[in-house]
Length: 294
Length: 334
Image (tube, each protein chain N blue to C red):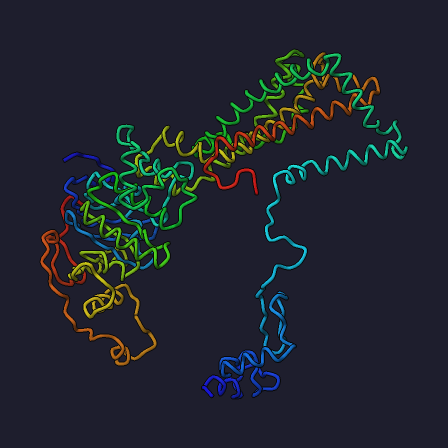
């Protein structure tokens, strides 16, 4: 195992694409952002991490891309990682194709490679454009091309659809699903959009008061669409877990009349990659603590 | 009738009382059969024609913004042709010149106060024919250029240092802020003591004056770069010198060029100060000589040279902006 220790305590890259987090803790002054946080992502698995704003999900993502360090705990990530942020974060003084190969070594920063990556997101003709001329959706697709050209084993998505308009978001969902299926990286999508999480992810985890409060496998057939009893049931479970009630004013009986029956079981679908986690809704997963943690 | 009209006619506190409620007003036109609505519109001459913009019906509160024909006397396109835009740039100077010429010709402006334009043109011709202007200009521009180069080098290095590093800021910025408040004219005696009265002293004075505009603008421009952009670049492996060279300097360039513009202007200002003291050549020397000889026509001709220098600085920086900042939306304005 290559040792690329970035955290004070045992952050080691794993090259299979798996993510292994045990008892991670992070606090800013008196504010505990992560408390005893555990998360596993199997190679090639798409995990969505849900949480209300300020729940620490962005901090976790920063830890995973080495912009922050954990105070305690074990964090193992693949060394080949890349990230798409909420904002495109394209360098305004560089043409689109140079943004795609930003920071790569000279041998890997060829225009041909950049154009191939841009073609994957449907922007091959924009290679010479300046970032300011792109629309929000186009800029975010360039950011996606910039992440994928690095052939990441782990792709980190930090609310990448949050700033897009509804129609562009639908198209981006499809594009991300398609590209993740093709490149098959492990994916951690940090979001507060429950529908988006259910549409895209193999597994949804909820981050609440610093630790994982729920971990649910999404066993819906792909391609997924909004609606349907199973979708709604999972959606309501997640909403309740995050702490949002769908209809705070109405009586529970009235709400149930307008909604599909909530007792619909999640459909079970065989999938090889997600063997790490139980295939049912497991509230407050307790994982044995490891001895390495100080 | 539909439920809509019932809602309007009912004494609801939210519904505004319409004058003559019950009579179909424009807001209720959807309740009126289509043929009837068309007929009433055709028959009543009070309804304004749609080519009159922004008519308001006080009864209904409907403001009609529709417009069929363009209003008279105003062209649809507001883009001025290139020739006209160029002409507008020189309009004000030409008007001032015309007023000056007229004032001198009619005797409103005595020659003692301000020489007439032809006299100044003669003085200008004299400066050129005797080669005084060309010699002075080449000497002066060399002094300004060398001083500016030193000033820019120091200002850029210090500005990047304080902009890029917290330590650099703590170490240098307060000192720079203090020294920048010292008028460069006040430094002249010290510079004479340190560097004598030769070329070195003149260049040192110009360099000193040029440091601060470029320093302040470079520092501010580096600090103004979005930290999220730098964070992203670091994640993608751009670090250290490459980060500075490829991301920070290009994106700070708009601010650096503003500093350059100011510093170039200051180099000309400092030139005058440097050349009016202990000089036997250069533009400032010519001005000082003309002043001693009470030759206002010569002074005016030389002042004109300075304004042209200002114009050239502006053109030069615009050209730089165009070549260095192709990624910016509008560099020169609309």
